[in-house]
Image (cartoon, rainbow, N blue to C red; front, side, top):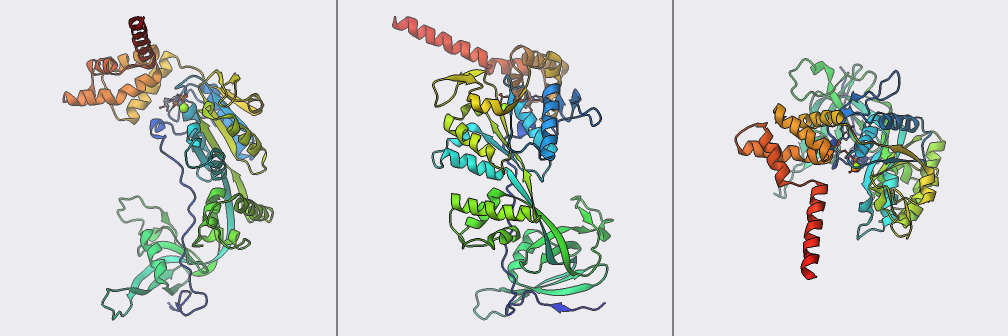
Length: 477
Ligand SMILES: Nc1ncnc2c1ncn2[C@@H]1O[C@H](COP(=O)(O)OP(=O)(O)OP(=O)(O)O)[C@@H](O)[C@H]1O
Ligand SMILES: [Mg+2]
Protein backbone atom coordinates (compact mmCIF):
# COMPACT_ATOMS: atom_id res chain seq x y z
CA UNK A 1 0.00 0.00 0.00
CA UNK A 2 1.32 3.38 -0.92
CA UNK A 3 2.18 5.64 1.95
CA UNK A 4 2.50 9.34 1.64
CA UNK A 5 3.61 12.02 3.99
CA UNK A 6 1.18 14.82 4.24
CA UNK A 7 2.09 17.86 6.22
CA UNK A 8 -0.97 19.83 7.17
CA UNK A 9 0.71 20.78 10.38
CA UNK A 10 4.24 21.51 9.47
CA UNK A 11 5.58 24.43 11.46
CA UNK A 12 6.72 26.28 8.38
CA UNK A 13 3.55 25.78 6.43
CA UNK A 14 1.11 28.65 6.07
CA UNK A 15 -1.73 26.32 6.90
CA UNK A 16 -0.21 25.51 10.26
CA UNK A 17 -2.79 23.86 12.47
CA UNK A 18 -4.17 26.14 15.08
CA UNK A 19 -4.14 24.89 18.66
CA UNK A 20 -7.84 24.23 18.90
CA UNK A 21 -10.07 23.99 21.87
CA UNK A 22 -13.48 22.64 21.05
CA UNK A 23 -16.56 24.46 22.18
CA UNK A 24 -18.18 22.06 24.56
CA UNK A 25 -21.93 22.17 24.80
CA UNK A 26 -22.91 23.03 28.34
CA UNK A 27 -23.26 19.73 30.20
CA UNK A 28 -26.69 18.98 31.54
CA UNK A 29 -26.86 19.81 35.20
CA UNK A 30 -27.33 16.70 37.23
CA UNK A 31 -27.11 17.91 40.78
CA UNK A 32 -30.76 17.40 41.69
CA UNK A 33 -31.27 14.26 39.69
CA UNK A 34 -30.17 11.69 42.30
CA UNK A 35 -33.56 11.74 44.04
CA UNK A 36 -35.14 10.94 40.70
CA UNK A 37 -32.65 8.36 39.45
CA UNK A 38 -35.40 5.73 39.24
CA UNK A 39 -37.33 7.83 36.72
CA UNK A 40 -36.26 7.01 33.17
CA UNK A 41 -38.92 8.75 31.11
CA UNK A 42 -42.61 9.59 31.06
CA UNK A 43 -43.66 5.98 30.47
CA UNK A 44 -46.09 6.60 27.61
CA UNK A 45 -47.88 3.83 25.71
CA UNK A 46 -46.73 4.34 22.10
CA UNK A 47 -50.11 3.27 20.71
CA UNK A 48 -52.61 5.13 22.84
CA UNK A 49 -50.19 7.99 23.66
CA UNK A 50 -51.45 7.81 27.24
CA UNK A 51 -49.19 7.29 30.26
CA UNK A 52 -49.02 3.68 31.47
CA UNK A 53 -49.92 3.51 35.16
CA UNK A 54 -46.57 2.03 36.10
CA UNK A 55 -43.76 2.50 33.60
CA UNK A 56 -40.27 3.99 33.23
CA UNK A 57 -39.98 4.24 37.02
CA UNK A 58 -43.14 6.34 37.26
CA UNK A 59 -46.22 5.33 39.20
CA UNK A 60 -49.62 6.99 38.72
CA UNK A 61 -49.98 10.75 38.02
CA UNK A 62 -51.27 9.52 34.66
CA UNK A 63 -52.96 12.71 33.41
CA UNK A 64 -50.03 14.94 34.25
CA UNK A 65 -47.59 12.55 32.55
CA UNK A 66 -49.81 12.32 29.49
CA UNK A 67 -50.08 16.11 29.31
CA UNK A 68 -46.29 16.42 29.72
CA UNK A 69 -45.79 14.02 26.84
CA UNK A 70 -48.02 16.15 24.60
CA UNK A 71 -45.81 19.11 25.49
CA UNK A 72 -42.73 17.02 24.61
CA UNK A 73 -44.28 16.22 21.21
CA UNK A 74 -45.00 19.89 20.64
CA UNK A 75 -41.41 20.75 21.51
CA UNK A 76 -40.21 18.14 19.04
CA UNK A 77 -42.49 19.54 16.37
CA UNK A 78 -41.18 23.00 17.24
CA UNK A 79 -44.67 24.30 17.84
CA UNK A 80 -44.06 25.09 21.48
CA UNK A 81 -41.36 27.77 21.35
CA UNK A 82 -42.18 30.84 23.37
CA UNK A 83 -44.88 29.10 25.35
CA UNK A 84 -44.77 28.22 28.97
CA UNK A 85 -46.10 25.39 31.08
CA UNK A 86 -46.83 25.29 34.79
CA UNK A 87 -46.73 22.10 36.84
CA UNK A 88 -48.81 22.88 39.90
CA UNK A 89 -49.66 20.60 42.80
CA UNK A 90 -48.95 19.66 46.40
CA UNK A 91 -45.40 18.83 47.59
CA UNK A 92 -43.89 15.51 46.48
CA UNK A 93 -46.40 14.86 43.75
CA UNK A 94 -43.70 14.35 41.15
CA UNK A 95 -43.50 17.81 39.53
CA UNK A 96 -39.71 17.94 39.43
CA UNK A 97 -39.63 14.27 38.43
CA UNK A 98 -41.97 14.95 35.48
CA UNK A 99 -39.82 17.85 34.29
CA UNK A 100 -36.72 15.65 34.37
CA UNK A 101 -38.56 12.87 32.58
CA UNK A 102 -39.43 15.38 29.86
CA UNK A 103 -35.71 16.04 29.51
CA UNK A 104 -35.06 12.29 29.16
CA UNK A 105 -37.72 12.05 26.47
CA UNK A 106 -36.29 14.97 24.54
CA UNK A 107 -32.86 13.37 24.35
CA UNK A 108 -29.40 14.87 24.16
CA UNK A 109 -29.78 17.15 21.15
CA UNK A 110 -32.34 19.33 22.92
CA UNK A 111 -31.00 21.45 25.76
CA UNK A 112 -32.64 21.15 29.17
CA UNK A 113 -31.67 23.76 31.74
CA UNK A 114 -32.90 23.35 35.31
CA UNK A 115 -32.95 26.37 37.57
CA UNK A 116 -34.36 26.84 41.05
CA UNK A 117 -36.00 30.25 41.21
CA UNK A 118 -34.03 31.35 44.27
CA UNK A 119 -30.76 30.88 42.31
CA UNK A 120 -31.74 34.06 40.48
CA UNK A 121 -31.06 36.12 43.59
CA UNK A 122 -27.31 35.78 43.60
CA UNK A 123 -25.34 38.59 45.14
CA UNK A 124 -22.94 38.91 42.24
CA UNK A 125 -25.01 38.84 39.11
CA UNK A 126 -28.19 40.74 38.30
CA UNK A 127 -31.29 38.56 38.39
CA UNK A 128 -32.26 39.36 34.83
CA UNK A 129 -28.73 38.44 33.77
CA UNK A 130 -29.10 35.03 35.45
CA UNK A 131 -32.40 34.54 33.63
CA UNK A 132 -30.95 35.69 30.32
CA UNK A 133 -28.02 33.26 30.61
CA UNK A 134 -30.36 30.42 31.43
CA UNK A 135 -32.55 31.35 28.46
CA UNK A 136 -29.57 31.25 26.13
CA UNK A 137 -28.37 27.95 27.57
CA UNK A 138 -31.79 26.55 26.73
CA UNK A 139 -31.64 27.59 23.07
CA UNK A 140 -29.76 25.02 21.07
CA UNK A 141 -28.34 25.25 17.63
CA UNK A 142 -27.57 22.28 15.44
CA UNK A 143 -24.87 23.38 13.09
CA UNK A 144 -24.26 21.41 9.94
CA UNK A 145 -21.02 21.92 8.15
CA UNK A 146 -19.13 20.20 5.41
CA UNK A 147 -15.54 19.99 6.55
CA UNK A 148 -12.34 18.88 5.00
CA UNK A 149 -11.10 16.06 7.23
CA UNK A 150 -8.62 13.24 7.53
CA UNK A 151 -10.45 10.18 8.78
CA UNK A 152 -9.41 6.58 9.36
CA UNK A 153 -8.24 3.93 11.76
CA UNK A 154 -5.08 4.90 13.63
CA UNK A 155 -2.29 2.51 12.69
CA UNK A 156 0.67 4.52 13.92
CA UNK A 157 0.96 7.10 16.66
CA UNK A 158 4.50 8.28 17.34
CA UNK A 159 5.44 11.47 19.13
CA UNK A 160 8.81 12.64 17.84
CA UNK A 161 11.05 14.33 20.38
CA UNK A 162 12.94 17.47 19.49
CA UNK A 163 16.67 17.43 19.89
CA UNK A 164 16.96 19.69 22.86
CA UNK A 165 20.30 21.02 24.03
CA UNK A 166 18.99 23.20 26.81
CA UNK A 167 18.97 20.35 29.29
CA UNK A 168 15.46 21.27 30.35
CA UNK A 169 13.99 17.95 29.39
CA UNK A 170 12.47 16.70 26.22
CA UNK A 171 9.92 18.41 24.08
CA UNK A 172 7.81 17.01 21.32
CA UNK A 173 8.59 18.48 17.92
CA UNK A 174 5.76 16.79 16.09
CA UNK A 175 3.55 13.76 16.00
CA UNK A 176 3.54 11.15 13.27
CA UNK A 177 0.13 9.61 12.80
CA UNK A 178 -1.05 7.12 10.21
CA UNK A 179 -4.67 6.71 9.27
CA UNK A 180 -6.06 3.80 7.31
CA UNK A 181 -9.35 3.38 5.48
CA UNK A 182 -10.74 0.54 3.40
CA UNK A 183 -9.36 2.36 0.36
CA UNK A 184 -5.91 3.52 1.41
CA UNK A 185 -3.76 5.08 4.07
CA UNK A 186 -1.94 8.30 4.80
CA UNK A 187 0.81 9.32 7.15
CA UNK A 188 0.45 12.76 8.73
CA UNK A 189 2.89 14.97 10.55
CA UNK A 190 1.01 16.92 13.19
CA UNK A 191 1.62 19.90 15.41
CA UNK A 192 2.43 18.95 19.05
CA UNK A 193 -0.63 20.85 20.30
CA UNK A 194 -2.77 18.21 18.63
CA UNK A 195 -0.98 15.57 20.64
CA UNK A 196 -2.60 16.96 23.81
CA UNK A 197 -6.02 16.56 22.38
CA UNK A 198 -5.17 13.01 21.26
CA UNK A 199 -3.97 12.18 24.76
CA UNK A 200 -7.07 13.69 26.34
CA UNK A 201 -9.38 11.58 24.22
CA UNK A 202 -7.21 8.53 24.90
CA UNK A 203 -6.81 7.77 21.25
CA UNK A 204 -5.05 4.46 20.72
CA UNK A 205 -3.93 2.41 17.78
CA UNK A 206 -7.04 0.74 16.38
CA UNK A 207 -9.36 3.69 17.08
CA UNK A 208 -11.19 5.51 14.32
CA UNK A 209 -10.65 9.27 14.49
CA UNK A 210 -10.98 12.29 12.28
CA UNK A 211 -8.94 15.47 12.23
CA UNK A 212 -10.25 18.63 10.69
CA UNK A 213 -7.79 19.81 8.10
CA UNK A 214 -8.19 23.51 8.81
CA UNK A 215 -8.55 23.69 12.54
CA UNK A 216 -6.76 20.54 13.68
CA UNK A 217 -9.68 19.55 15.89
CA UNK A 218 -9.44 15.85 16.68
CA UNK A 219 -12.47 13.69 17.32
CA UNK A 220 -12.42 10.07 18.38
CA UNK A 221 -15.29 8.28 16.66
CA UNK A 222 -14.92 4.88 18.35
CA UNK A 223 -12.99 1.64 18.23
CA UNK A 224 -12.59 0.08 14.82
CA UNK A 225 -14.86 -2.97 14.62
CA UNK A 226 -12.01 -5.11 13.33
CA UNK A 227 -11.19 -5.39 17.05
CA UNK A 228 -14.74 -6.23 18.11
CA UNK A 229 -13.84 -9.81 18.96
CA UNK A 230 -11.39 -8.68 21.64
CA UNK A 231 -12.47 -9.09 25.22
CA UNK A 232 -13.52 -5.59 25.91
CA UNK A 233 -14.42 -4.83 29.47
CA UNK A 234 -15.19 -1.20 28.85
CA UNK A 235 -17.93 -1.91 26.34
CA UNK A 236 -16.43 0.51 23.87
CA UNK A 237 -18.42 1.69 20.91
CA UNK A 238 -17.32 -0.12 17.77
CA UNK A 239 -17.47 1.64 14.44
CA UNK A 240 -16.77 0.32 10.95
CA UNK A 241 -13.54 1.23 9.23
CA UNK A 242 -14.26 4.30 7.08
CA UNK A 243 -14.60 3.73 3.37
CA UNK A 244 -13.24 6.11 0.75
CA UNK A 245 -10.10 8.20 0.95
CA UNK A 246 -8.46 9.32 4.16
CA UNK A 247 -8.80 12.95 3.15
CA UNK A 248 -12.36 13.80 2.28
CA UNK A 249 -15.31 16.11 2.83
CA UNK A 250 -17.44 15.10 5.77
CA UNK A 251 -20.81 16.35 7.02
CA UNK A 252 -20.37 17.33 10.63
CA UNK A 253 -23.15 18.14 13.04
CA UNK A 254 -22.56 19.86 16.34
CA UNK A 255 -25.01 20.88 19.04
CA UNK A 256 -24.22 24.10 20.88
CA UNK A 257 -26.28 26.57 22.82
CA UNK A 258 -26.39 30.31 22.31
CA UNK A 259 -24.72 30.61 25.71
CA UNK A 260 -21.80 28.46 24.48
CA UNK A 261 -21.42 30.85 21.57
CA UNK A 262 -21.57 33.89 23.87
CA UNK A 263 -18.79 32.50 26.04
CA UNK A 264 -16.59 31.33 23.21
CA UNK A 265 -16.80 34.67 21.48
CA UNK A 266 -16.19 36.63 24.64
CA UNK A 267 -13.06 34.78 25.57
CA UNK A 268 -10.16 37.20 25.34
CA UNK A 269 -7.60 34.73 23.98
CA UNK A 270 -9.74 34.03 21.00
CA UNK A 271 -9.18 30.29 21.27
CA UNK A 272 -12.21 28.80 19.71
CA UNK A 273 -13.69 25.68 18.34
CA UNK A 274 -15.05 25.12 14.91
CA UNK A 275 -18.61 26.28 15.42
CA UNK A 276 -17.60 29.55 16.96
CA UNK A 277 -15.15 30.03 14.17
CA UNK A 278 -17.88 30.18 11.62
CA UNK A 279 -19.90 32.48 13.78
CA UNK A 280 -17.05 34.73 14.77
CA UNK A 281 -15.78 35.19 11.24
CA UNK A 282 -18.41 37.83 10.73
CA UNK A 283 -17.88 39.52 14.00
CA UNK A 284 -15.76 42.24 15.46
CA UNK A 285 -12.54 41.28 17.27
CA UNK A 286 -12.98 39.38 20.51
CA UNK A 287 -14.40 41.11 23.49
CA UNK A 288 -13.74 40.05 27.01
CA UNK A 289 -17.23 40.09 28.43
CA UNK A 290 -20.59 38.81 27.37
CA UNK A 291 -22.45 42.05 26.73
CA UNK A 292 -25.88 42.71 25.27
CA UNK A 293 -24.18 43.98 22.17
CA UNK A 294 -22.18 40.79 21.75
CA UNK A 295 -25.35 38.80 22.22
CA UNK A 296 -27.28 40.70 19.61
CA UNK A 297 -24.38 40.34 17.18
CA UNK A 298 -24.38 36.62 17.80
CA UNK A 299 -28.14 36.50 17.28
CA UNK A 300 -27.71 38.26 13.96
CA UNK A 301 -25.10 35.82 12.74
CA UNK A 302 -27.06 32.85 14.05
CA UNK A 303 -30.17 34.07 12.22
CA UNK A 304 -28.23 34.32 9.00
CA UNK A 305 -27.01 30.76 9.45
CA UNK A 306 -30.53 29.55 10.18
CA UNK A 307 -31.85 31.29 7.08
CA UNK A 308 -29.13 29.88 4.88
CA UNK A 309 -29.78 26.38 6.23
CA UNK A 310 -26.33 25.94 7.83
CA UNK A 311 -27.83 25.82 11.29
CA UNK A 312 -31.10 24.61 12.71
CA UNK A 313 -32.67 26.14 15.80
CA UNK A 314 -33.38 23.62 18.56
CA UNK A 315 -35.46 25.41 21.19
CA UNK A 316 -34.92 23.52 24.43
CA UNK A 317 -36.50 23.63 27.85
CA UNK A 318 -35.81 26.05 30.66
CA UNK A 319 -37.20 24.50 33.84
CA UNK A 320 -37.76 26.95 36.70
CA UNK A 321 -38.60 25.09 39.90
CA UNK A 322 -40.23 26.80 42.92
CA UNK A 323 -41.40 29.58 40.63
CA UNK A 324 -43.26 31.38 43.45
CA UNK A 325 -39.80 32.54 44.61
CA UNK A 326 -39.42 34.82 41.57
CA UNK A 327 -40.29 38.48 41.99
CA UNK A 328 -42.33 40.76 39.80
CA UNK A 329 -39.27 42.08 37.91
CA UNK A 330 -38.28 38.55 36.97
CA UNK A 331 -41.79 37.87 35.70
CA UNK A 332 -41.76 41.07 33.63
CA UNK A 333 -38.46 39.99 32.14
CA UNK A 334 -39.70 36.47 31.41
CA UNK A 335 -42.90 37.77 29.91
CA UNK A 336 -40.93 39.82 27.42
CA UNK A 337 -38.29 37.17 26.79
CA UNK A 338 -40.95 34.63 25.88
CA UNK A 339 -42.04 36.92 23.05
CA UNK A 340 -38.65 36.71 21.37
CA UNK A 341 -38.55 34.58 18.23
CA UNK A 342 -35.69 32.52 19.67
CA UNK A 343 -37.30 31.65 23.02
CA UNK A 344 -37.08 28.19 24.57
CA UNK A 345 -40.04 26.46 26.18
CA UNK A 346 -40.28 27.48 29.80
CA UNK A 347 -41.60 24.93 32.31
CA UNK A 348 -42.44 26.26 35.76
CA UNK A 349 -43.24 24.25 38.86
CA UNK A 350 -44.72 25.28 42.19
CA UNK A 351 -46.46 23.74 45.17
CA UNK A 352 -48.05 27.01 46.34
CA UNK A 353 -51.71 27.86 46.08
CA UNK A 354 -52.69 31.51 46.44
CA UNK A 355 -49.72 33.47 47.70
CA UNK A 356 -48.16 36.93 47.52
CA UNK A 357 -46.26 37.75 44.38
CA UNK A 358 -42.84 38.88 45.55
CA UNK A 359 -42.49 42.62 45.05
CA UNK A 360 -46.25 43.19 44.88
CA UNK A 361 -48.82 43.65 47.60
CA UNK A 362 -51.35 41.37 45.97
CA UNK A 363 -51.86 37.72 46.31
CA UNK A 364 -52.17 35.69 43.14
CA UNK A 365 -52.64 32.02 42.32
CA UNK A 366 -49.27 30.23 42.66
CA UNK A 367 -47.56 33.59 43.34
CA UNK A 368 -47.57 34.28 39.59
CA UNK A 369 -48.84 37.63 38.24
CA UNK A 370 -52.13 37.25 36.32
CA UNK A 371 -50.70 38.38 32.93
CA UNK A 372 -48.16 35.60 33.11
CA UNK A 373 -50.60 33.04 34.45
CA UNK A 374 -52.88 33.72 31.48
CA UNK A 375 -50.18 32.55 29.10
CA UNK A 376 -49.44 29.28 30.87
CA UNK A 377 -50.63 25.82 30.04
CA UNK A 378 -51.28 24.46 33.52
CA UNK A 379 -50.70 20.79 34.33
CA UNK A 380 -52.02 19.84 37.78
CA UNK A 381 -50.47 17.05 39.84
CA UNK A 382 -52.54 15.20 42.44
CA UNK A 383 -51.80 13.56 45.77
CA UNK A 384 -51.10 9.83 45.60
CA UNK A 385 -53.24 7.08 47.05
CA UNK A 386 -51.81 4.54 49.45
CA UNK A 387 -51.14 1.94 46.80
CA UNK A 388 -49.18 4.33 44.59
CA UNK A 389 -47.15 5.59 47.54
CA UNK A 390 -46.21 2.01 48.29
CA UNK A 391 -45.12 1.42 44.71
CA UNK A 392 -43.08 4.64 44.60
CA UNK A 393 -41.32 3.55 47.78
CA UNK A 394 -40.51 0.19 46.16
CA UNK A 395 -38.85 2.06 43.28
CA UNK A 396 -36.88 4.27 45.62
CA UNK A 397 -35.67 1.50 47.95
CA UNK A 398 -34.51 -0.36 44.84
CA UNK A 399 -32.81 2.73 43.43
CA UNK A 400 -31.06 3.33 46.75
CA UNK A 401 -30.32 -0.38 47.03
CA UNK A 402 -31.79 -0.77 50.53
CA UNK A 403 -33.51 -3.97 51.66
CA UNK A 404 -36.50 -3.80 53.98
CA UNK A 405 -38.21 -6.81 55.50
CA UNK A 406 -41.96 -6.98 55.01
CA UNK A 407 -42.98 -5.56 58.34
CA UNK A 408 -40.55 -2.66 58.05
CA UNK A 409 -41.71 -1.88 54.52
CA UNK A 410 -45.39 -1.99 55.54
CA UNK A 411 -44.62 0.48 58.26
CA UNK A 412 -42.66 2.76 55.91
CA UNK A 413 -45.58 2.79 53.44
CA UNK A 414 -47.97 3.61 56.26
CA UNK A 415 -45.77 6.52 57.28
CA UNK A 416 -45.80 7.59 53.61
CA UNK A 417 -49.56 7.75 53.40
CA UNK A 418 -50.27 9.01 56.92
CA UNK A 419 -47.52 11.62 57.15
CA UNK A 420 -46.10 12.37 53.72
CA UNK A 421 -44.40 10.63 50.84
CA UNK A 422 -41.37 12.92 51.09
CA UNK A 423 -40.96 12.09 54.80
CA UNK A 424 -41.07 8.36 54.08
CA UNK A 425 -38.57 8.77 51.25
CA UNK A 426 -36.25 10.62 53.59
CA UNK A 427 -36.37 7.80 56.15
CA UNK A 428 -34.93 5.20 53.75
CA UNK A 429 -31.28 6.17 54.11
CA UNK A 430 -31.19 6.68 57.91
CA UNK A 431 -33.13 3.43 58.43
CA UNK A 432 -30.48 1.58 56.49
CA UNK A 433 -27.77 3.19 58.65
CA UNK A 434 -29.63 2.13 61.82
CA UNK A 435 -29.74 -1.45 60.53
CA UNK A 436 -26.06 -1.37 59.63
CA UNK A 437 -25.16 -0.09 63.09
CA UNK A 438 -26.81 -3.22 64.45
CA UNK A 439 -24.79 -5.32 62.02
CA UNK A 440 -27.68 -6.02 59.65
CA UNK A 441 -28.11 -5.34 55.94
CA UNK A 442 -31.90 -5.69 56.03
CA UNK A 443 -33.94 -2.90 57.59
CA UNK A 444 -36.36 -4.10 60.28
CA UNK A 445 -39.45 -2.52 61.83
CA UNK A 446 -37.47 -1.18 64.81
CA UNK A 447 -35.06 0.70 62.54
CA UNK A 448 -37.88 2.57 60.83
CA UNK A 449 -39.64 3.24 64.11
CA UNK A 450 -36.44 4.54 65.65
CA UNK A 451 -35.95 6.93 62.74
CA UNK A 452 -39.51 8.24 62.97
CA UNK A 453 -38.72 9.15 66.58
CA UNK A 454 -35.37 10.72 65.75
CA UNK A 455 -36.62 12.72 62.79
CA UNK A 456 -39.85 14.64 62.71
CA UNK A 457 -42.06 15.20 59.76
CA UNK A 458 -43.14 18.69 58.78
CA UNK A 459 -46.46 18.88 60.59
CA UNK A 460 -45.03 17.42 63.79
CA UNK A 461 -42.15 19.86 63.83
CA UNK A 462 -44.58 22.72 63.24
CA UNK A 463 -46.70 21.52 66.17
CA UNK A 464 -43.64 21.39 68.43
CA UNK A 465 -42.53 24.86 67.40
CA UNK A 466 -46.00 26.24 68.14
CA UNK A 467 -46.05 24.57 71.55
CA UNK A 468 -42.71 26.15 72.44
CA UNK A 469 -43.90 29.53 71.26
CA UNK A 470 -47.06 29.24 73.34
CA UNK A 471 -45.09 28.25 76.44
CA UNK A 472 -42.79 31.25 76.00
CA UNK A 473 -45.78 33.54 75.57
CA UNK A 474 -47.45 32.13 78.72
CA UNK A 475 -44.28 32.60 80.69
CA UNK A 476 -43.85 36.23 79.67
CA UNK A 477 -47.44 37.04 80.61
N1 LIG B 1 -45.37 9.29 40.21
C1 LIG B 1 -44.17 9.02 40.71
N2 LIG B 1 -43.56 7.86 40.41
C2 LIG B 1 -42.34 7.60 40.88
N3 LIG B 1 -41.64 8.41 41.70
C3 LIG B 1 -42.20 9.57 42.04
C4 LIG B 1 -43.49 9.93 41.56
N4 LIG B 1 -43.81 11.13 42.06
C5 LIG B 1 -42.79 11.51 42.84
N5 LIG B 1 -41.81 10.59 42.81
C6 LIG B 1 -40.57 10.66 43.55
O1 LIG B 1 -40.89 11.23 44.81
C7 LIG B 1 -39.93 12.23 45.18
C8 LIG B 1 -40.61 13.58 45.29
O2 LIG B 1 -41.09 14.00 44.03
P1 LIG B 1 -40.74 15.43 43.38
O3 LIG B 1 -39.51 15.97 43.98
O4 LIG B 1 -40.81 15.31 41.92
O5 LIG B 1 -42.00 16.24 43.92
P2 LIG B 1 -42.40 17.75 43.65
O6 LIG B 1 -43.82 17.71 43.21
O7 LIG B 1 -41.42 18.41 42.78
O8 LIG B 1 -42.35 18.33 45.12
P3 LIG B 1 -42.08 19.84 45.64
O9 LIG B 1 -43.35 20.60 45.45
O10 LIG B 1 -41.78 19.66 47.09
O11 LIG B 1 -40.94 20.38 44.85
C9 LIG B 1 -38.86 12.19 44.13
O12 LIG B 1 -37.86 11.29 44.56
C10 LIG B 1 -39.59 11.65 42.93
O13 LIG B 1 -38.70 11.05 42.04
MG1 LIG C 1 -40.00 19.93 43.11
